[in-house]
Length: 264
Image 1: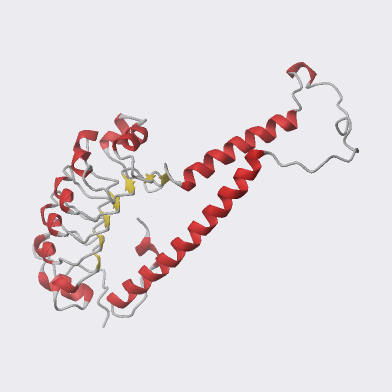
Image 2: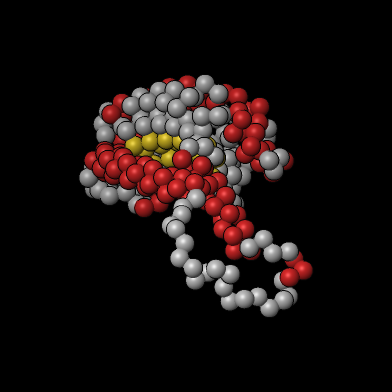
């Protein structure tokens, strides 16, 4: 029996029911559910979802939700996908103390003040309010083009905003690569003024064939260091991801999740 059917036949006038949750997960105790995918089922109300006290991973994308009240009871929730709904108030999420990743792209959030309720979530490190490829956004994203910088100031502990890394080793390495590229461009230009661009230039610089002592600039040294650190971090994240996927598969009855189930 496949408990992961994408049909919302167990909805009651658009409201989540106990029967729906049990049929989707195969769990008879709502408090035992850890992972829940309710994408694109036409859900309008969260109903009894707040009874899933142990829930850690929740996908509610592509529904018609306007209110999130029951989510305030999900103290163990770490990953939440609310994209493509009609949400204009995130206040209930202030109760999700362990929340780490929030995707709220494609909703009705009109100003940054509506995000004040998230300031107490100090584990939050991934925020998404705009998804260009999927054409999902919020009114405040369109009204203020520089909003990612404002969000970075509001949430200095957040590492990723709209899929772009804004803090941590990834962002430092990106800036370092830009600096290195500019440095190499300067070296390649040789400092020649613009008016010499049309003149014939020698094949190689003067002294090219002379043996030079091996040199490595400090910026290159730092680049090697940052690359190695980033590689170690990626390997560690990969191990953590494998562990989480194994837990999800066990929680869903041993079947494998679809690849797009992990896209937040």
